[in-house]
Length: 314
Ligand code: MN3
Image 1 (cartoon, protein in one colour):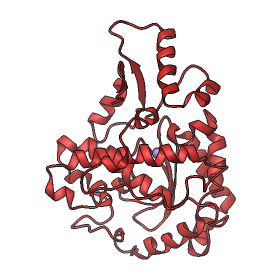
Image 2 (image 1 turned 30 degrees about the vertical axis):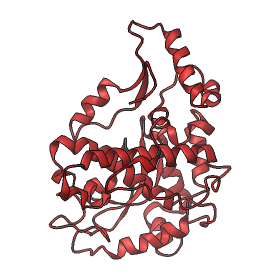
Image 3 (image 1 turned 180 degrees about the horizontal axis):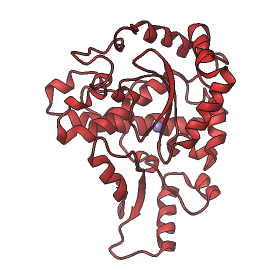
Image 4 (image 1 turned 120 degrees about the vertical axis):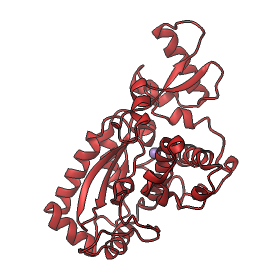
């Protein structure tokens, strides 16, 4: 919720119903609603919205984008307390480089908000969700979202959303760099060529998938249980881990990831993102993940203790 007097963040009705079911459609974004005690005019909503955004120092990009704006969570996160306020077993990992390290492709202001506010918010809310569940507090976030079926129903949606947000972003910071090479190397380079025809063809298919995500979500290159690579998308903060696949590379296409710099031009952001993929890291990480696969058995995720469940939920 937004802690701004008279303003609250709300989920759309469709998002609420979608999230009520763990297997429901992935729809939903957070909008800013105005609580004025009476029905507000569209103009009034816009003015109040602008006032809030001005308070956040975020009006420039919005003005450039026009009057209709879905915050998709980032204005909400901009009001959350700093990460240091979070108490619990899960902590916000530090950004492994300077905020401006990815300029000009991803700007420093976006990185500040994205890491310090959005990711911090997922961690904080995950801690709140698991409080009072000692067995869950001992698990890693990857274990939690890899075994969502074992999470109690009353916190299932919170762990799915907030745990997914934590896991996805912790993974994502690591795969970004301007110094990580321009293409996958070694085994990953070979496997991408085999699967997608060529690296440019992979980039084209991946970009198309990222552009096709409706609303907020992610596009991924994942390692499937049979050891093969595939491109897939997930809605909201759902992780491929919850479906038994390991993320190898991915892009956050929530508006909070790009709106300040790119406004509604998601294709430009996707093209820019391809300049800051740390292929050296992704390639070496792929080798270790693939090594955990045995063609005769489902893969295990290195570092994730899977009791009976190997590479997915079932
Ligand atoms: Mn994000």
